[in-house]
Image (cartoon, rainbow, N blue to C red; front, side, top):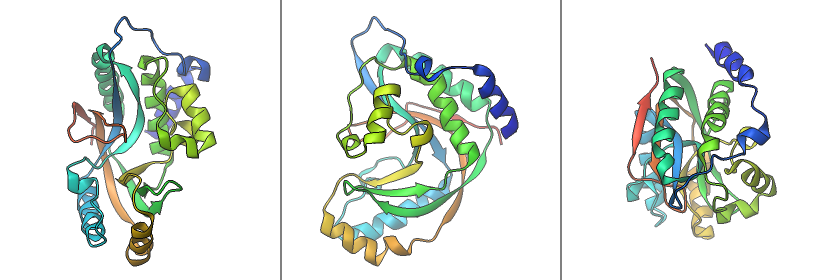
Length: 230
């Protein structure tokens, strides 16, 4: 199955310049939409456990605030009247894929004091993210807003300027965000007590979702979801 997708992508023959060129829209209204991977219940259970551990350090996780655990495939700003096309592309992609296995690898504290639950990248996950970027990037706005955190990572800033999103192609780093920028000392204590002792968890990729997100790329409700074939 993976070979089939690799061949299909190779046949698309889209250059980086083409991927980076958005379709113009008559609408001036924009919104940030996250095209993300829907994980199985094992992820919710794991994130709940971590959320409770964070609470012991007086840290309120995104999960405890009602935000969805998800793995971003491609996140950027779009003209709002391109949402219908985005849904069509997401459904098309989901129809071409199947459920596959993934692993929650470790908990990472970033340079900017965010907290991430990293996902072990696999050839199939990378291929899915690459294909998603190629399919939907042309729908984005011409000049999306650069997230503040991206300025900490020059290579991601370059990717954002070219593709409208920082975590694409070679910069793709699959993860679930546990906390946005937060108290450094509390994070140090959490990592010593819990984060450094995290044991990997296996789960399945079930499908693709779309959600409108806040300035931190987080969402509380799906706009649409499309499941893979089993």
